[in-house]
Image (cartoon, rainbow, N blue to C red):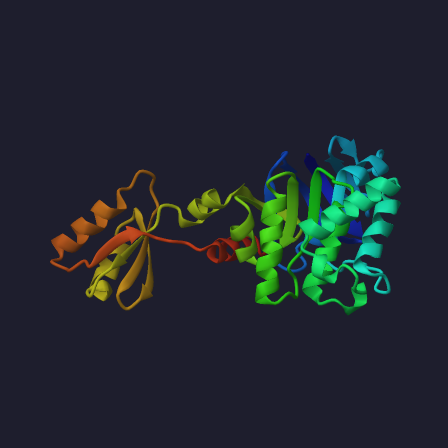
Length: 307
């Protein structure tokens, strides 16, 4: 549904995006991750046909963003990071206006407006001015505007930015529900958003893809089969393990060590157990090392810091 091939986007001489390639298939919910300034919003603007690519090719719903701009916009709903809304209009009037801009006839506009009022939880504020709404409700209005023409593809740029915890949960639930019936690509630098709403993430840094995988694969990629060893004798065990060429050991605290293999097929548990047994040291626990998505993110962006 979305294909980005060797996209480079420049602002003058500055390259915000560099040779970026990834794809989002139909009915996928994909998180687009990266630190602030990584190039997320720029990429989404190109996908939404608000920017023409400097180099490369972007295809949305089978349509090239350069040659079939209007077809792209009809197949895609876009919520920018700072959603432009007409603050003097009521919610219903605003949705009616956006439906008219999308080319819906009078009866279709009314049906679409009421559908989105219900779907996006706007019934209680439907007759209020948009300018009087909380940011959470304004985000819901923005999502409703993106959905008014029932596009099969939805692109959301930082949909929960600036919301309070309750509003975050509400928008998160809405995105999950939308992902059951359409393709969704949303950007965020908040890792819990990705964990809560999707199974796959594309991670970019300095305008380049540094990872593209399911969350479970990303966690496995960074953990690299590591184990956590707990022992009251950790300080004595540490130099013994470090002396072994096939192991990499990090001291986590006074009683915990992280052990990784440097050679494929190393049986870490057995290796650590033998080492402790030979030295007559006590082991309290050997367990797979659990790596958080935050740890993955830090690892990927730090490793690519000089890219």
